[in-house]
Image 1 (cartoon, rainbow, N blue to C red):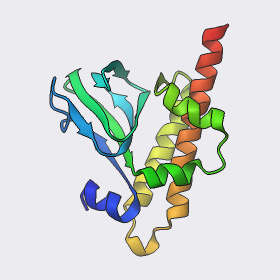
Image 2: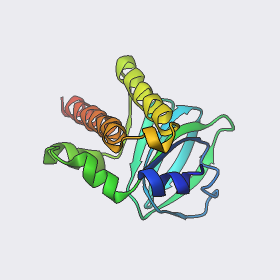
Image 3: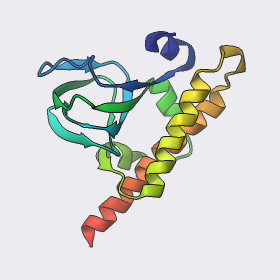
Image 4: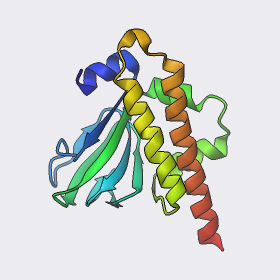
Length: 168
């Protein structure tokens, strides 16, 4: 099942990506909300005219309808790419306090410096990837959305702890 079909049936898609679908130095419209988590190599990307340098264990949250481009990347660049619809974002954010949600989008880029946090992030992605590969009859949206929710809570917590560290 390709990612478009997966998004239509499940509301999300997860894949390993080298962002080859983003043409070098050419703006591309991002249809879906995206979370890009670098697992190796590096890439200099632009999201809505703001530059980010993705290195191992860093991430960027990209709202749907954003303009993205790859400025440069190493040959070994790989990232976990989670795409999801606005409906999924609304569903996973139910009950989150406003500070948590705001922090995800106000601070869309960060690097995970704590090894335990990086391991949790990778394991959440892996669990979601394995679950997404299950046949539809065994797929329960609540479980998948719970994993996505936990990823975004981790991102908000990492962003808030980084923000506190920068204030000290």
